[in-house]
Length: 265
Image (cartoon, rainbow, N blue to C red; front, side, top):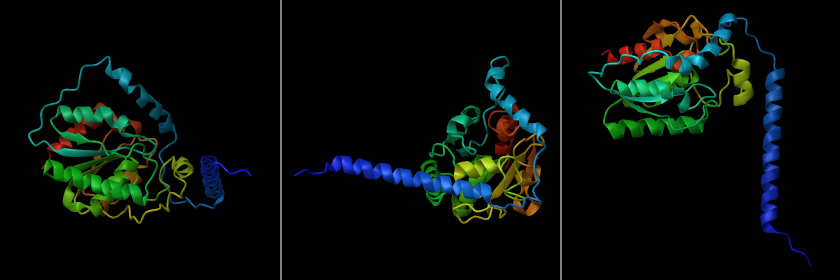
């Protein structure tokens, strides 16, 4: 008489579950590719600016040949929570965090690794994370979100407005239509859901009940101006810069503009 090895059986079950999950994910992405999508009202950046995005990756090298940014200590240090863009992590915003800390601000990571799109779980985590930082430093938090991270920041601020001093978005697609960018196809393939049907209940056009500032750039090759600035009722102010989309996390102009924004009362 032979008996089955429970360890082998458990491993087999896990492999089969993983295979079924992979098959479901693959079918879902095929459905997304095949669906009929109307993007007539979308407003996308000129494709020529896509090529400018590549230059942002050379910024760390360019920094080696120029003087350190002149940054003065802030008269009103803030506590800041940085939220990275789609398919990036806190590492991508490391230089920005370092410069803000040079100005005397306390900068905290979002704590979620890579940003692969919204889920109920990561929204709940960020709400708890925000409240924890607020309690630890005994002051409201400035949420600074780059690209999709800015959309996250706006939504978390709606959930926990008592913990937020201000929201600053950096090239974030909260306005116009979800298709007003050049990478929505890529987003759908990675995130696994339609860009206009996220697995969370959100209204990206609704302004958070705190001061909300939108940074945007006419040179952004990914997110449209209309998406990054929204309508007047969807934010309090806009700040125009001249950087690429990838440059929002490391451009000297962005660093200085952000530091200036943090000094505003």
